[in-house]
Length: 338
Image (cartoon, rainbow, N blue to C red):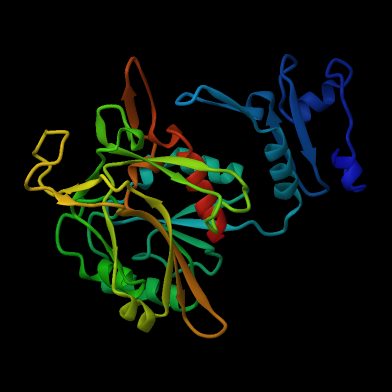
């Protein structure tokens, strides 16, 4: 099928017993099946084990052959790949996001960590990932990020609720440029179809095919946010003055509530809890800089869902990013921005 579409692609099926030189060249064992994509400049080896994935939540197996081969062709022939930088230095969850980084690299996006205290803002940054800082930015770092935004830079923000250790005016000043804040309280569900069984803080939300993020995929994605906060936007007049518009990506049900006192163990809404009907949990925000330039930011009021953090379910456990379509949401969000 590839050769029918593009005459520059040649396919050869190789009997490894007849070509031990290729096994050695591409570091493949004699008992292994693999696909090698070789361009004049470089090669990419895809193990047979990488050609499918199993979702332990739904029990479904997905064929990834076309995705893996296409990405390998892009990776071996592209002069430049998009690059995502993960901000560090403020207690971010970067060390717990190795799976997310691996998935991004599989999707032909280069990743690197970024400490703005010790380096200038990299010119090749296509997306800046900010994964729930617990401490404030310095003025120097804030100025660098604001300059990046004003030059049309794009940001992926994963912000857990109730995580900041103190006032963070510099960090909030960046959010203020996009006209929103994230609550300290945690959104909890009462709609049993929108939560993991007996876990109201594990909010399940569908991202339909109608969003800018998913319409090209032509498929519904379901994500599970774990103790998310509530994203609150300024009024329409303020957003208009900021040149900001937004599109909702993830939302709680009309039965959701907001809990600020996390010492309460009751699963049901109490008198101290607040209404959080249809609370926004994820959004795509666009800020117009000028007639030629705009900055996009995707925010989720949760970072745990994108991490390696082990979540125990019944008699098994899995990483948070493996729940539902969490991996797809992380990768597609950054891919969209890049």
